[in-house]
Image (cartoon, rainbow, N blue to C red; front, side):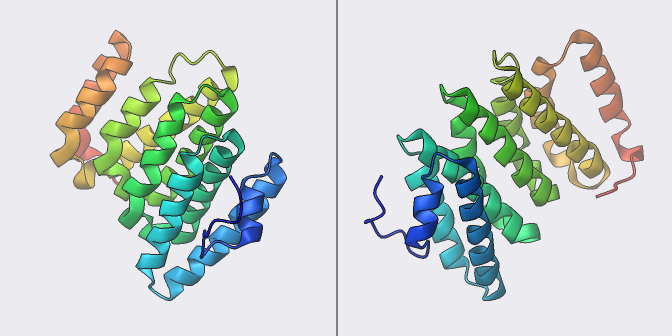
Length: 210
């Protein structure tokens, strides 16, 4: 990928850094993206926010170049952090390209995808609930990943999603509970399934904490 193409509002320096093989430079680019998106949030400029996300997804996270894909992942996570509670308005656009990287042949990319999705889910809070099915489906693909770092990253993300599930249970989970259980139960052992069913049976007694 060259920086001659127009990636505005991303600057040429951000584009070059996102494509860099060094993580430190990609991180600097992510911080600049976070700052840029915060400015758009302050201006209530949703069109530019969507445009930035689209560029990061199509031109980077879904790129044929591995370093560009890594840059896209950290850039999407930066967008989510900048959006904060408003990230729920853009979740599908943020999540889909990250989940696509779960299938990457490069284990480092799969790990970075776990890391990016962890940050997106953590910031989005309750807005992730309608996306639980696709998130757990993506995680199931990494459950037996041969790379220990990827497996560890997926386990951290799995725990975060389960915490979100419990936190939201008493408030808005019931309309989605059937679909969520359909996605989650096949990934559990028999003993875990019994525990999960019992927990869901007591859902109405769980106090929401976030």
